[in-house]
Amino acid sequence: MPSEDVKQSLKLFIVLSRAYRAVNENVNKMIQTYGLNPTEFAVLELLYHKGDQPLQQIGGKILLASGSITYVVDKLEEKGYLRRVACPNDRRVTFAQITDHGKQFIEDVFPDHERKIHQLMSELSPEEKEVAITLLKKLGLSAGK
Image (cartoon, rainbow, N blue to C red):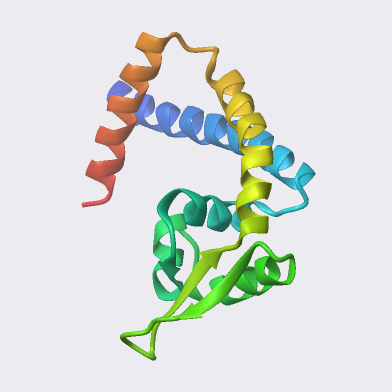
């Protein structure tokens, strides 16, 4: 029979998993109303906030397998939201660069996206959010070792 401490750990895992799934599903539904899938939105948001990114590094920054990046970049390029740009110093490197159309798109939808996430998180007080951030970072860092 597991100890109370082990039972509590299992319960925490289940509660954390369910909370993540509920919030994530809510956000993903909203992203789909913009005509993008969550991965496309994540790539576009990354380029908007962080600037041009080497294609080879995008997957690691948005937690996506590198094989899928080509497909996502192709889709965003077809929609006119980004372009591929060759690196002038290294022909082996290609950058993804957000277009003016992509910037305008993000600027149009991001305030609504931000509001929705804030609304989802508003169940917690600012103090509770700070505690949750600290505890989840601690958990994530220890699990990543």
